[in-house]
Image (tube, rainbow, N blue to C red; front, side, top):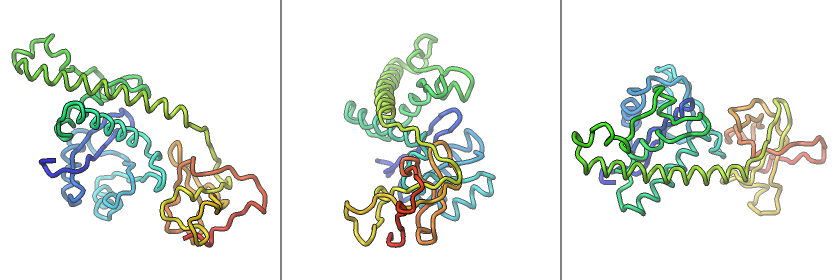
Length: 278
């Protein structure tokens, strides 16, 4: 963008679903990101108890850990090979991408200029999981929208052109948001599987989806797709599990989405070795 931003930092409150879309640069220092975090999140909402994020190098950095340790915030990370562990943020990111893509094409506007409208529309749209809009969940009242400013006289103060343009932007974004949410729900309903595992239960681990893994010296399609079995140590969130991996796999994060696991039926012949996996 003209401000040298090339990424969007998406922060979502897991309770109220309120989201903030912060323009950033992939080259920003941790000091600068900490400043943006303080100004854009802590200033408005205070210090969170826990944060779940992806395993971006910036968020696993010692400075970032020390910063949140000093604030009393516990850092947790989504599964390394399945971002749905942090599902709320992933859905929000997908929704934001769809909205911005459509609006940039429709209106020819720069994506950064649309972020305030996108954030406003997102936080004031109905979310089925909380039965209300995020804004209402956070503040306990409905937000006055620019779609209704003319009813209470703001047109005379702000000017008819600004009112018209703002209302048009917000209404269009809300239409895009409803379309995206409907498509995501249909896709999720189609692919959803009710998979649950118990602590202590042995399970196979799918390695086909783990990027860069070499199975038995090759990446051939005929090699086993699963290894194990491995013991389930604990459930992490609603859709992920921590496994007891052997020392040979110590370089792999041991939390996996349920769709990467497979029920194990006790049979010694089914034990698939992992010693040749790199």
